[in-house]
Length: 266
Image (tube, rainbow, N blue to C red):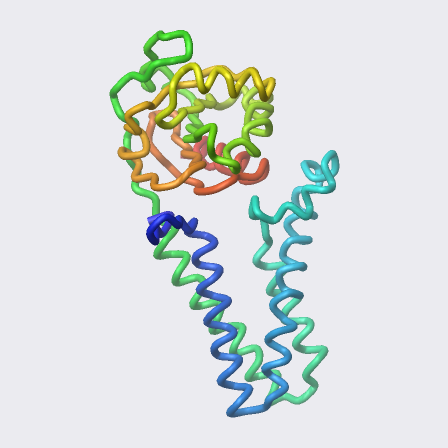
């Protein structure tokens, strides 16, 4: 399972695990604040934003070459992109600075460790991806020709499931189109979900996008095959056509590159 569906809401697995970890941390800290020392409550409320900011800055530092041309992307956290170890290091150093008492240090570090265990357990449960083979059927292209996915075998394939009415899909499309033109070690397939050739062509023209391999999945066959409940969703297939990972929600340039590299490694 890589996402959880609750009615109309779809939670990506990594974000769901993070939410569970944060809730567990704040719950434990609230209990410790009442039973051990009330300073632990204020500490927990401060340590969360400190850890998040440090985690974001750590991620940016690791991928500065992609952030440098677009520095405002540093603030675009909806794409994701956090360094767990940078966040934990900042939380630990702040804790050691704030609490000089050995007892409070032990309790606070124990709360951090417990939250990490909860997060890791949740992540292991939601991060599994079933290694599905690509469906054998063909899909119509904008010019009416039929395109079987098997034609793309031999290279990793990135399949983006999207729709013109989906705001995150529209936001990520220019970046993905640029990546598709830059990377010759993977094939990018943009599978529109449930819309007509006219609607898709009009969107491409209005957005001034030039993209190869735009498919029309009007029957939602790919969404059913890969159990995708929300858009956008980006699938990473290896050279044999086997699904290796799946990203729900708007994707960043860094996550897209990492997904391709992971598919190449299999």
